[in-house]
Image (tube, rainbow, N blue to C red; front, top):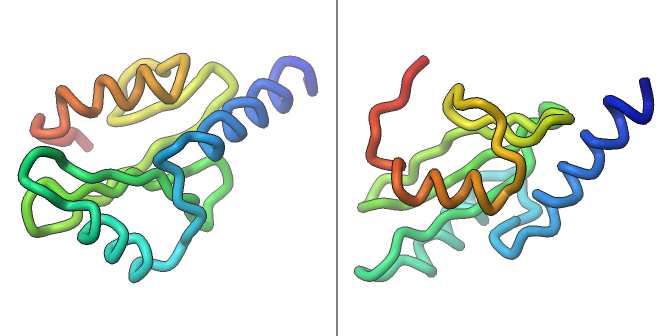
Length: 107
C-alpha cells in the first residue's frame, strides 16, 4: 500500500511544491499581489499554491483584471486538472493549461 499509493503521492506533491511557479501561501492577499505585480501585456501570470485540503492545490491566474482560481488534485498517478485524465508531470499539466485556459470549465 505504501509503495503503491503514499510514495507516488508524496513524490508528486514534492514535484508540484518544487515548481518555479509554486508560492507557499494560503491567504489570498499575497497571491493576488504577486499576480498583479507580474502582470504585463505579453503574458498571463499564474501561481500554484497550497490549500487547506490535503493533496489539493490552487492554480491562480490573472488573464485580464479578475483573478481566477482553479484546483489541482494530486493523486499517485499524477495531477488532475479540470476533470482531465491525470497529467504525469506538472509541466505537462501547465502546458495544457496554457493552451486551454480560455476553455469553459466543466463541473
